[in-house]
Image 1 (cartoon, rainbow, N blue to C red):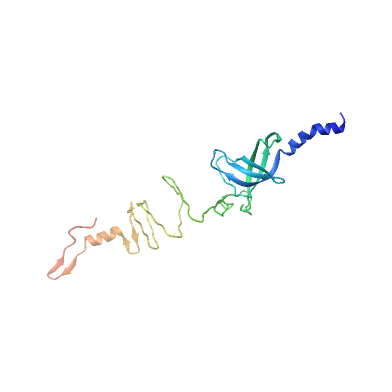
Image 2 (cartoon, rainbow, N blue to C red):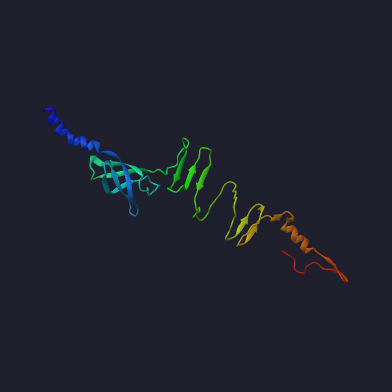
Length: 209
């Protein structure tokens, strides 16, 4: 076979090999279906619609327009292809080796840091939707604390400022302020007598319990 004939036979195979993988830009994404579908631009203005973007299990993201991704053409054919990954200019930078960050386009993130700290950053609110939230260590709150329900303390509760609770406040031990405990206040009240005209007033008929 002449070289020219060989090149002509191999040309379709070469085209398919070159088309196996390509860098692509995401134009938009449709995230309502079982699989996310994207519209992408490849190479010199080539546009493909309704391409499946493969995501890792347990992580779902909707890449903004302009994100860079990898196009994989199965068998080198543009009629059967998928998009993998998506990177955007809003990606956090300067992470230390071993660190990871789950982020969005607007700067909200969950950041697992090298120093052992986990940073949760949200512009508006962090919502924990669970029947029970169990904190194994101490908790510090620099702002205000609003509780719409009961507070049950199995130990001591110390409040340096003003505490406001809409529901009940219950302690299995004691509630203390700088003047003493509530139990001490009850003892003083229940045994309190006071001189009056003609004698001494008796202790309260109904003690504080």
